[in-house]
Amino acid sequence: MKKRYAPQDHTFAICAYKESPYLRTCIESLRQQSIPSRILMATSTDNPYLRSLAREYQIPLYVNTGASGIANDWNFAYRCAQSGLVTLAHQDDMYHQGYTSHMLAALNRASQPLIYFTDYNELRNGKEVSANRLLRVKRLMLSPLRVRVFHKSRFLRRRILSMGNPISCPSVTYVKENLPDPLFIPGFKSNIDWQAWEILSRERGEFVYDPSPLTCHRIHIGSETSATINNGNIRAQEDYQMFLRFWPKWTARLIMRFYIKGEESNQVG
Image 1 (cartoon, one colour):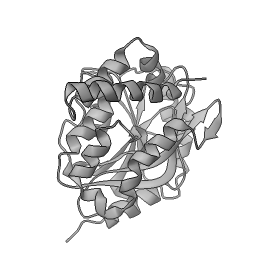
Image 2 (cartoon, rainbow, N blue to C red):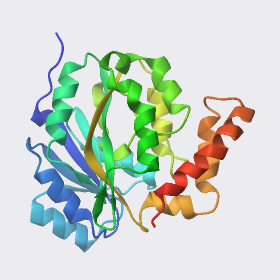
Image 3 (tube, helix red, strand yellow):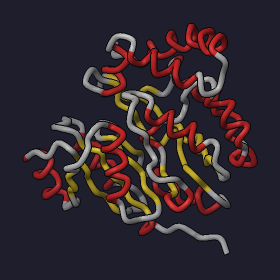
Image 4 (tube, rainbow, N blue to C red):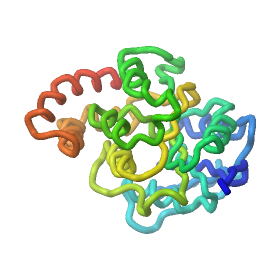
């Protein structure tokens, strides 16, 4: 008999780092979900600001005293959640109030879900942006997954990922019982999520895509995405390494010429 998921089966695990001025807004968006579920915070940078917010909102705060780094911090937050469904909430981002209800409904329609993820808008200078070149390209890449029967296709999901990473990491809910552990592999600085999707794309099960823009990804100068794009060739080197998982070297180099131009729209401006 297929398992059905309920609100108590889900946790938002907020990955908190230092003293983000946007963390309170993120917490509020999680508390305002039309269907409430659990919330926790996990950090490797324990400080009075995080402890104060945890007390104010009565959210459990877990401190990683082991190996740090993005992959290790995400794995730690993921494991802190005792529920079978986990959404790693990024502290700078926001979630529309229908996220949890959409997620539960979609996963309950699936037969063997691996991950659930949604479309997203951007937050730039306090304004929600629903369309730009990068968003249009990512939506085009994911358009085949609008058809539910394709959620099970390993071939299709690998073809999508072979052209870039259109999956918004903050929008993803992980179905623990169907996933390997560890989920994230240390090494990369910016493509930890793309690397995880590539590994999961080989697994039997479903990538459950919801084309509703239910999350808002904040683009600002302090974000990790902006930092890695602006930090020399780190992003380009990691992108090239990912393309090599799908293509021969000459094809990967050709794709990189176009991919770098697309990533430029992710910068603050």
